[in-house]
Image 1 (tube, rainbow, N blue to C red):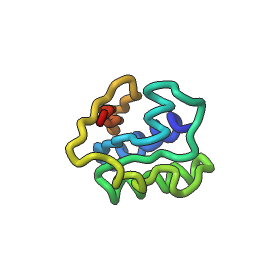
Image 2 (cartoon, one colour):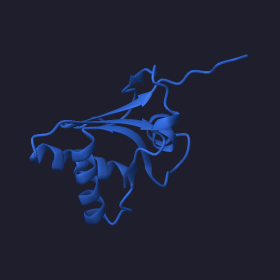
Image 3 (cartoon, rainbow, N blue to C red):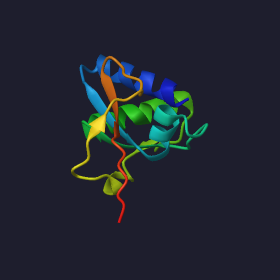
Length: 108
């Protein structure tokens, strides 16, 4: 359902002449990039342009029967300000690029 939501989000952005960007965090990145688990309950992301993406996401939620906050930026405080984002194996859409933060492990 996440991919269908992303596809519809891209369609709505295209209809408005908007190019969006989703930098995926948490479970969604794990599901789509690493196939680490089967599902996630929401999409934690940093996204832009914020107002337009939120508006389109609400419409997608209504159309597909998803929770109104199926895409949210609640986890943005956990992303590194110096983080490097890359596409990896994430799906890309005509008017919406998907990125994930490069994973790094710090040993002490």
